[in-house]
Structures are given as C-alpha cells and as structure tokens.
Image: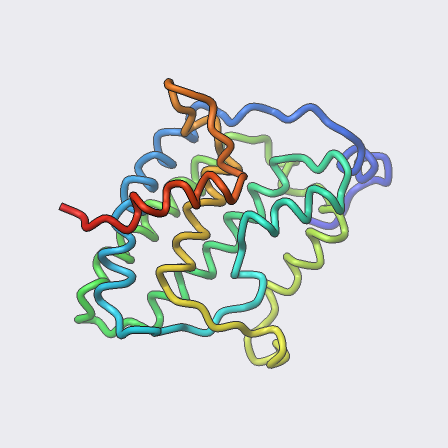
Length: 211
C-alpha cells in the first residue's frame, strides 16, 4: 500500500475529478442500508441504558471527520475516503460482535449486518483496478490507517473511546450516505448527506417507534 512514485502521490494530493460510484456498488449498499434501518431496535432496545463499548478513537468516525480530512488534503479523492470507511467499520462491527454473548438477542442481526458489509466490501474491491489499492495514501489518511491497524495491546489508553453501539451504527449509516451519495439520491430533491443538519432534521423520524 505504501510503494508508489512521487508523481502518483502528488496526483492524490492535487485537485481531482471525483469518479462516480460504480453502479455495482449500489445494490449491496442499499441492502446494507435496509439492515441499518433497524439499528435502533437492535442496538438500543436490547442493551442496558447508557451501555458503551471501547473502540479506537478513529472508529468514532463522523461526518465531521470527513469534513476535516477534506480540508486537510486539497482535492482529496473520494475513493481514498471510501477505502478508509471500509477499514473503520470493519473494526466497529467486530467490536460490537465481540461484546455479545452467543444468545444475545441482537447477535443474529449484527452477524447478518457484518455479512452484508463484507459483501459490499467485496464488490468495492472488484469494482476498481488492483493498483488503486496499492497507491500511497495522503499522510493524514495513512496516519489514521496505521493507528486503526495497530495491535490492541500497543494502543495507548489515550486513544481509546467509549461509545454506544447505536451511536457507532448511526455514524456508520451517515458516513455511508455521505461517501456513496449517488446510491441514495432522492428523486424528490437533492440531499446533502454530508451535512449534519440533514441528519438532525431526520432525527425526529428516527426516534419514532418502528412498526
């Protein structure tokens, strides 16, 4: 992932034309989104009040993190952020599953969610040339990637955070819509899924009881 010429590195840092999300990505992402629509039932109701799990600070991956990285790296390729999104949420799902006993009522849901995530990741990898995944990442992204892939026993205590399973899957869903927005385009009006205000407007609906 690190071996790359200087010219290619500059290409990543220079303003680039964002490539559209491959159409093949939309089916598995929409399937994943269908599962995420039930996250409140499985990630809130089936856990004690104020229950949290320990995750790496970079696994608390919000819309604000995406905005910050776009400001730090001029012309940041969307594909780089999509790669990071898969890396982050791979760890998030593993950590949620790890705290669930075999008979936990939310375990089958979470295991199925992980399968659907893996399906989407497989399509993502096969939708791009292999050399794309061998390119060096911009420094700020590479630093985040390196921290995410550290052995847990080598991670300083200061880099751990506590978050509820529901909040982690909220971040998962919101950032997925932001980074793969073409798959979730509305026919009624253009939506800015990368805007926090969009999700705040939808919060009232999200709090309604599921049928």
